[in-house]
Length: 172
Image 1 (cartoon, helix red, strand yellow):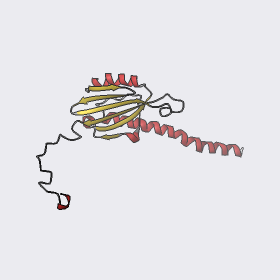
Image 2 (cartoon, rainbow, N blue to C red):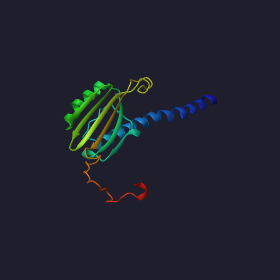
Image 3 (cartoon, helix red, strand yellow):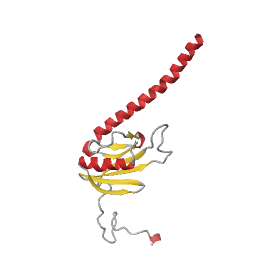
Image 4 (cartoon, rainbow, N blue to C red):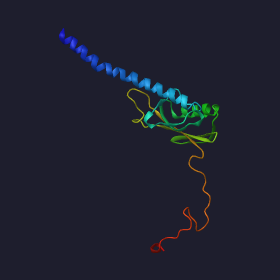
């Protein structure tokens, strides 16, 4: 009888933490989705997506956000293409261009911002979780159209940003 209780206690200490890990993981995923829905309310994401937190960077919130969000989804690339072609324009974004090949690239514009969506099917081993469907990777990047920099003004010949400095004698 004493051995039985030791086995029961041992099982509780080993199975208990493992069971709480799955609850914790789903709770943090739900919290992350809630934060992203709040911060990025102007760009829709599929409800079935699972966010890859360590590859997601968000700066700002609402209509002033920029950054990159990566998520995995069990939907196929054509299903996600349909989602983005229908739902994103309905939320105020205009599709500027699209490229469909082995990966799908979509470009949207809204209020001096540019959103790029890259949809690609993961390889069999990458997108396969134990006993689950194959995943599709989606990366959404939103930036301001002028964030790279404005066009430079042409410089006059013989001048540079330091004035009219001539090279040292040994370089002539």
